[in-house]
Image (cartoon, rainbow, N blue to C red):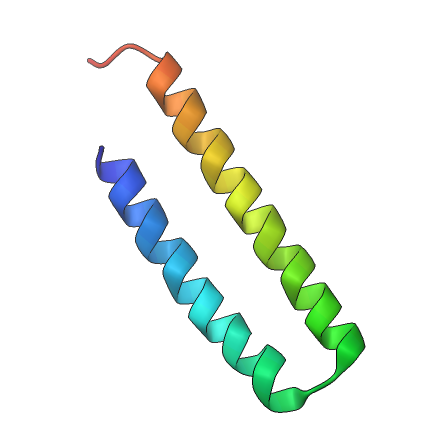
Length: 58
């Protein structure tokens, strides 16, 4: 459960950080790259949470 909470905090922080640049710089190619990176971050987070639930707790 700790990994889920810290993962959510990390996803939120990187979303705010990169979202700020996507809005303020107003560059379409940069916005596309930022959205792609955020999609990969979310995908990795979901995979990590699913993998963690499959493993037995110690």
